[in-house]
Length: 155
Image (cartoon, rainbow, N blue to C red; front, side):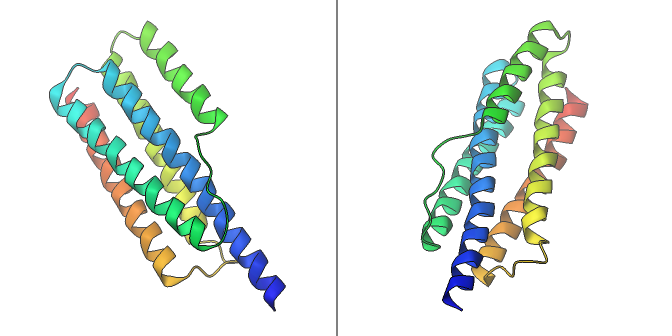
């Protein structure tokens, strides 16, 4: 029974580490977009999202440590490539704000999918505290996606 418990904890911590990396990537992406857009309202939105994702990363790190696993320390290569793509795309785009906000929206949709994947994994029953944290993060990302859509329409 103890060995099964170990695998259970490892599977959850691996999923949480995946989300941690995604939050590192999102935080960096929001900061990059913030540096490229000269609009106070949109910059405030991006700054708030970057801070939010930094907070999510801290919460995920704590949760991973509770499972006795080591949290990841940085973002992914895929995230680095996405940010390089954002740089290239905006360098040649006629409407930089719109392009960056579309990338923000795309990233938020991908984050929602990642959170839902863990939350709806039938092979794992998350502890109530972990499930609650993940749902709170997911709901905040949904709200962020709605705001990104509004800013994109205004831009």
